[in-house]
Image (cartoon, rainbow, N blue to C red):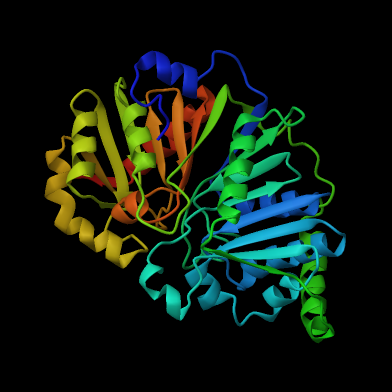
Length: 398
């Protein structure tokens, strides 16, 4: 955890806020079909480099659309680096000819975080839960969405709602959070737990290449600007400051850095809203919630058990409910049409913390996690409106 997390409100202002607009602009993406479109635009306009790091990439309908776009980028010479969690790589990609074809390009590298091997069986519980896309060292997208039908496209069954933040750097490499994310990627890419394979093209993937080319042609017909889109600055809003926080990169037990930072950011807050799919805490985590509610109005929005998509996380909430309420938090059990996978913390009317971190012990102590601390009143207001809508759909726990 950074050394400044022992200071005062002055340190929060210096590290996480600014009184003037920064060079990085943002767009909040809550709709699943828009989330697919923005990814296709980023990949379709890439000229030099693409980094895709994802917890769960599948060769289903919309996952294959991402593969098809990456295949087209690889064919035109873009350098591509894919970083994928080991368990889901084994489950969903090992048998995919489309993925294997993409990985066979000489300009494509695939890194598998903590791969499943006989030697590694006692470490498989440490997962890479990050989800981000970086293009041309100019822009990135980061949030809680995985790369599959559950989170992308226009499906209406078996889906989750989630949130991404698109960050566009208007300067020549001066974007602070972009530089932080690139530095994070380079470090995790070099971790000893990451197995890297370089491509070697083979004629046996001819059918897979043809399949992905056909899919991409259909994408160009449906989304006619994915190779020509240029309104990055126009379609984004100002942010004063964006700071990346992470939970460590090693495949081992983590220091709870993300939660510690959230605890620090809320020290002088009057109002805090936590959006999380479910809550599973230990004593320390309950103490953090108690500490926040001692001086602030603390509201927690989570999926009602009957509406959640994670049966283990949601049903364990029934065992946790009394302890959560004893912290002083107001709890809202969300009865949304679809499960909400979003992870966010709103601090007063200025700071928004958005990314992959769930308020549970896995995210706190086991997995890699990334969150953006964003100083933007406009974004904070936008997310507040979403949270107000969710609270209206919720059962408030008495």
